[in-house]
Length: 145
Image (cartoon, rainbow, N blue to C red; front, side, top):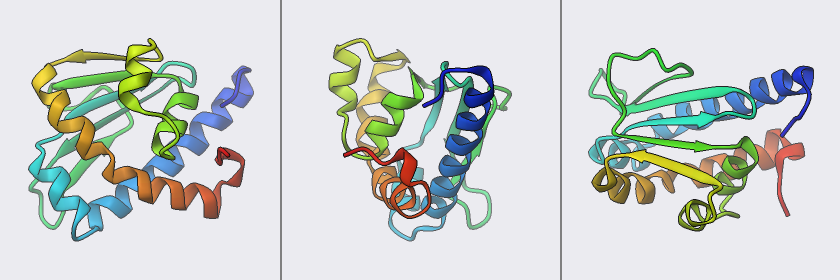
């Protein structure tokens, strides 16, 4: 996304805003929310180029299916950590990049429980539709052709 420190701060704020909106929408979605909760998510995304961290977990709190913080400081330990630059994440979340291929090419580093990855990675595709729509409607500068 950005390369300088001022532009990195702007890019981090924009990316965080988009992710916040996507997660809020997905959490409230009557199909995607329960499916992601059923997957038992406990995942950390690290975007070292911004720098930005997103900790995402399934929850049973009230009407919510997901809980997230843009911090490593959470009460649970992630089962899977995915580390990638924001450009790779943006492409993945728009459905333009395969996470498996990005891992094979070294653009995404995965650490943690491999069994969790087998469940989490397919479940994360539920974020793609919401992300693509929000980027197209509200953040056209992030849209990839």
